[in-house]
Image 1 (tube, protein in one colour):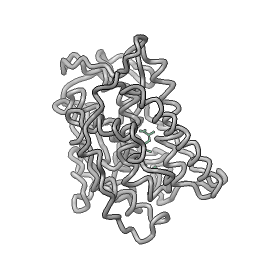
Image 2 (spheres, rainbow, N blue to C red; image 1 turned 90 degrees about the horizontal axis):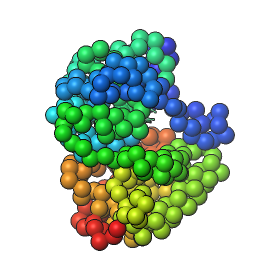
Image 3 (tube, helix red, strand yellow; image 1 turned 90 degrees about the vertical axis):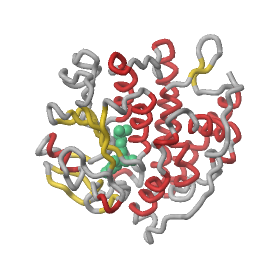
Image 4 (cartoon, rainbow, N blue to C red; image 1 turned 120 degrees about the horizontal axis):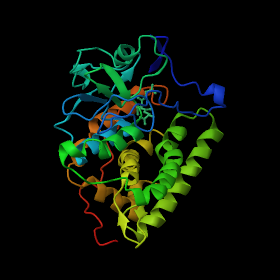
Length: 331
Ligand SMILES: N[C@@H](CCC(=O)N[C@@H](CS)C(=O)NCC(=O)O)C(=O)O
């Protein structure tokens, strides 16, 4: 685990000491947008037109942020249009690697050893963390974006003319509600589990833990009444990006965050509505094929040696949502 400073790799863990023991996630720096016409999107430069075969996604199967982009690639029928390379679940002194003996698919574009070499190929003197996902433009040989929340928005609409898929997970009339719930879930749940797990002081851990379970309790209540997080003006809930963003944390929760990140007040399996909701999302067409528990468990338990010094990966737990059915009876 480390970062680039002026293009040089440094093996260095997160600096929580500068923040009284709190984990503070860095903002993603590379924020261009693919658009249908190639005009600039909400941020960054113009020149990234949606085209078949032009873009490549670098992901980790372990990572919840990268997982969002894999789900949208699947749901929006982009598999034929956007290729993928998968890093190894192990993240040690070189950060994410393309070691095929350790579970990576290899770097299909350049045969590189490390993901940080993709970042320096984009900008030789790059400074910052080297994170997945990365969306790469094969034509201009540069990074389009390393921000998952924006990559899923691009996937949601930019390629519609090429794929013919018109599903909309961020419909105009629901955007304000989606943005509001995303914000709460991002801070308290998606990033909340990391704030609990990476805290190096008791009080920062407890603050994150408390906010996490307050929010999960609220979500449990909401999902007792409706099938998906956001409802339209007629009271019918709609499956949106907010659900997919929550899903990638929920699916890892009982296997990893309960034990490894000490988020152990209760499991998702102990919440009736949240566990039914998790099963519902897991069984949407194509989604189960994006979930790889071997990579998920191995990455967290083996790579974070300061949390789990032996690197032993637990054999359990048995997860029930894979057998459970959904909740189609709810509006
Ligand atoms: N804002 C980014 C965050 C991505 C992120 O933090 N990914 C983690 C993996 S779960 C990573 O690559 N971490 C490596 C590091 O921080 O050095 C996004 O949502 O795309």
